[in-house]
Image (cartoon, rainbow, N blue to C red):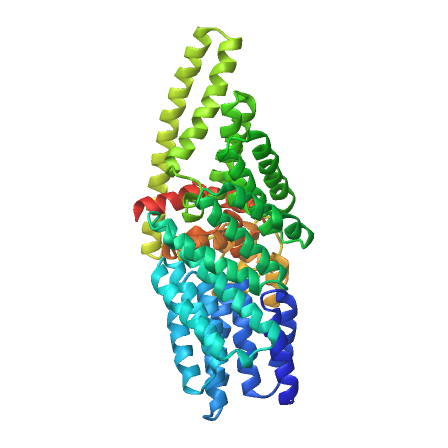
Amino acid sequence: MSNKEYLILQDKVRTLTNSNIDSAFFYANKIENSSDNFHKAFAIGAKSYLFQIKGDSITSKQIYREAFIHLNKIPKSKEKIKLNAYLLNYGGLADWKRGSFSKALDKYQQGEELSESVGDQIQVFKFKSNIALIKADVGNYKSAISTAKQINKILDKIGYLFSKEQFSINKSNVNLNLGKFYEDYYKKNNKRTELLDSAQFFYNKAVIYSEEISYNKIRAIMNLANVYYLKNNFIEAEKNYQSVLIIAKENNFENEYSKIIYNLGNLYYFNKDYRKALLFLKRVDSVYYSKKTNPIEFLKSNYYQAKIYSSINNLEEAAKHSEIYLSNYEKNGFKFNKEITEVNFKLSEGGVKNEMYKIQKGYRYKSIFNRVTISFFLILVFLLVLLVFSNIKKKRIAEQKVAELIEKYKSNELNDLAVISENYSSKGIALKNSVVTISLEKEKEILDKLKILENKFHYLKPDFTQQYAARKIKTNTSYLSIIVNNHYDKTFSEYLNELRINYVIKEMISNSTYRKYSTQAIAESAGFKNAVSFTKSFNKRTGVTPVQFIKGLEKNN
């Protein structure tokens, strides 16, 4: 591959990474086919980040090490140092995606130092930008703001290195970040109103630089509206939200559109204009049901709808939305993180949930007294008490099971699938009621190859089936079925599910970031096609649901 062709393809990989992952993979693979170690190192480094974007942490970590094997084969040069910095940038992005902020920061700082040493100012600018975002993510807003201001000055000095369009995009991003840092800093120190003034200043600058960049313009104006909202300037807040509502919809920016209509509904709720509030909050639900966009906005939307219907004494609708809130909270394992509490929710998790329970209780009590006698109500109360005690008992049992699994993990018992069955002889093994006989040599060969597939985590792939495994170890499905059944006393499907569930249990226990994923994300990481089948298999294996297990772990910690 010529250097000219490499630079063209490299630019395509960088440009497409955040907009079209499959196309970025395609061009990275083309670069990797080159015989040049320089080309291969860049391509594999880029792919390690692309795999992480897709959620494949195992492959991402494996091939990231391969990139440095090719890098080490390159003679010392200025270009090698630049490439080393690029690889550190991709590694930092992947670590950041995994929630490993400390590792990401280390790689960014190393990369910045290397880029400085060879005078690569554009790459220095990128590293400093990522470092500022990391600082903000961990709540160090003061340092994030200081770094972002340095970046702004650097950008002005090296502006000639960018095209006019790229320079505007970078200025827009820097000012957006500065506005967000000041806004989030205010949410931690809400007596310092001057922080909101600074946020407003930088959001206004971002609007100017985003004139030709629709996505950034929407974000800047929406965030500017948030600042007006926090300042209780509801007229300006509404005006700004409305000004970008149509643009977001026409450009299919679904996340932003959902946030804008939620913010409008929220604004009208606090101004007690319930008719308008319901109009926009119902749109949030509609977008979520059709696109599964912004589940947190959907959760909060149903909270406010329940409150509105309760205040206008429509208890049936209030109960319906409180039920949606509670069921989605439990189903998705949502935590009341800063995104919920800092914007509108002033109550604790327990307080909000209790409100929803009270709304449902009010509806139930009214219906009961309208239709049944006091004696039936007393019976119901008695049954509820029994249910409470039953739930307490179930909770204790669940906690006990979680503790047992933790002990098994510590003693490495989770690596053993089951006690090996002894229904085979020294002449070989045979399935009950079957005429098929397998020699001990063939049996050992198949078991060894199956173990290799296990060690390489093939079972985490969604297409890992009995046919897939048989094809990989070059045997037939009958032999494989016989051996799995005799050695593990399980069908192949049961054996596969237990491998996957054991992997999830170990990850949940050892990786706090993994525990924060949604049930669907955890299911997909272990090869399950959906959260329902995963939850069913997890419950069968452990006796508790994934959400119960995570709660038990948090309590145990």
